[in-house]
Length: 230
Length: 122
Image 1 (cartoon, chains in turn cyan, brown):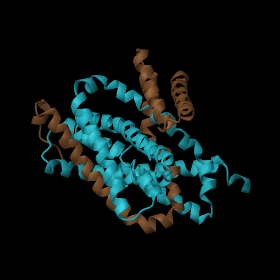
Image 2 (image 1 turned 90 degrees about the horizontal axis):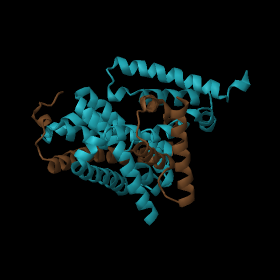
Image 3 (image 1 turned 60 degrees about the vertical axis):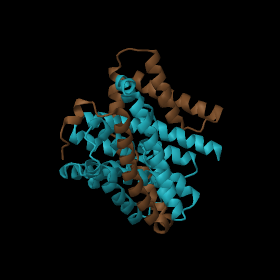
Image 4 (image 1 turned 120 degrees about the vertical axis):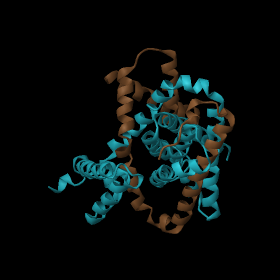
């Protein structure tokens, strides 16, 4: 029996069951950002590990196949970018300007604020890619000497906050163009933002997906350049 | 199906190799994304299976980073010390990025699109 405890079988089964239950709750909530399945499943799984006195590295090793899939998923972001090439060409100027402005704002404001709070370099490295999609954020944070787990949680928080505040903030600014609204949500709050945008309008959703994909590349590139200069 | 998966893995592998050989500081998977983009541009044809596979991966992204998110259980010390700063930074940065991106897009694109006449929902 005890030989089962460290196997991928046990922990993958537990993770999938907990996640599926979280996903059902999320669906019942009408996909409210605060009921995102990762936000619900993560504390439950931490509780299970603590209750069974399972060290995190044991769990991480058993479930690494899930994390492995993130790599090909990031590569696959090329497909939606390619599918939108006509839009990108037509709106090259506004997209490029908004992307650069948004990517730089996200990095500088997030790093600047934790710096003001006296945070060490590894926290600044973990928060710098906060606006990218989670797998890219984790990879970039690792690259910069940050903590991938912390980056994952920070990126999730960005998504929840972005998805919940986008509509009131953009209304306040009187942005009525669904292309601008969607793109801004995607650049600032990645996949969470895109999911929210699709609930409101198809055009907004498409531009949010584009914003998410382009910002993954933009932020990773900007931070790589910065890192190589330091 | 296997062909599409192989294409993704080969792009990622090539990205990792480039990352290691050239010291290019981008993550291998992001270099792989750029390589796939180049491949799609160079070899233009219908790619239904690739679209299905990447669509499936994107749709199930959430569960893939659950094991990583569970890793915060090891970061209790950092979170209790810098948690407040992190929350403030994430909230302010998210709102600011939203506003700056939308305002710059509108300033550069102008307001000439029919979409801009629509009422915003919700």
